Image 1: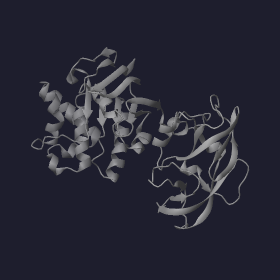
Image 2: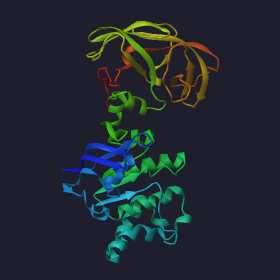
Image 3: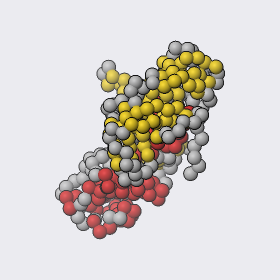
Image 4: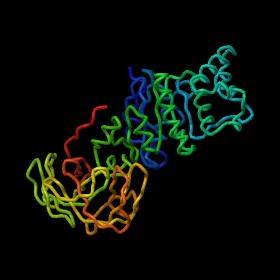
Length: 381
């Protein structure tokens, strides 16, 4: 039996259509992460599962039970917010057991639940402290512990790590993944941070303008995005995009032309529906764009000048101006091409070089944004 099922869920705010016929099934024990840009509907969707937002149509089913019209407290869920929402005058133990006290559970049951949660979260030595005596990471663990004590059927997390610094976010990602493995509970997690999504999720749900663009494992979505939006959203630095046009079609391939590059043929495509003159987009991830000493068959090359260098220790990121080639990579806000080198490089600003990519690594997106490239092989893990 699935743990959570959303059936044709629609949500309107006056004239704004926030969620559009959302269909989603989450299996018992899955860790599902919802991502998307601000305003895409991910937090609204989480709140509809929790019962904090009423829907205009559709159904919310938890463990086979239609909870669409039930109150949040009756749905068998527990929610952890971005804000810790701890009571400052209560101890850690009192905060963690508050929900059970409000449910009039016996003291012995509350104490046992708090002790178990404290052991799981390594908070045994903090139980007598108040929130102001804790670090940010400890406060977030207390908020999670308050959810654990209720033994919910489903955990809901709404950007719970956003208030933490980078080091604590990394630590808490590890702890949350370990917690999921230990509890085996269904967890639904909302974040704007794609690193959290890629490292924690069993499956990622990518939302955009109230619609689900794609659902799948992190590697599946990264290697085989369904469309231009997913391709550009997942990946840091983001995928490079090149504006191009179709010169001719000879299925299953096309001949493409882009400013600054001689026409080249690209095969292995679903070219149905393409015609000469169509505007298309070529995509290439920064790690697949490299400095080329000598061009070979199957490699597309172009000259560029380094505008910015980021030395990140284990890797170097170059931003290239390759005019007149038209880059639509907005990650840097400059339209430059991004090259990610997995090594320390002495290359400096102003250096001129030839960059290139293998056609086997490239993606092609049609006029409607749909991915036309055949699926790429996903490395085994």
